[in-house]
Image 1: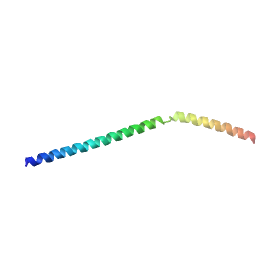
Image 2: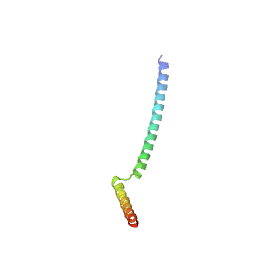
Image 3: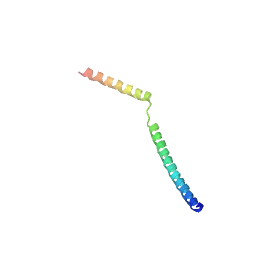
Image 4: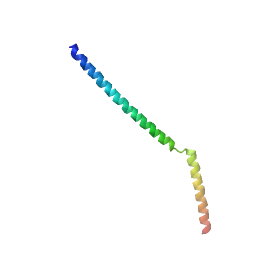
Length: 73
């Protein structure tokens, strides 16, 4: 009886170990991909203040263009 339990327990432990190892590698790969994505987002992020400043400059140019068009008519 004991002779048959030991190989089954050893096989179960080995299978569990392989399963845990594969899960760990998948989680590590996913973590690496998330880190790369976060880096890409951080590199292309524009702050709200910077965007507002750029938008104000565009609006100022548009007003100048509108004034010039109004003077032509």
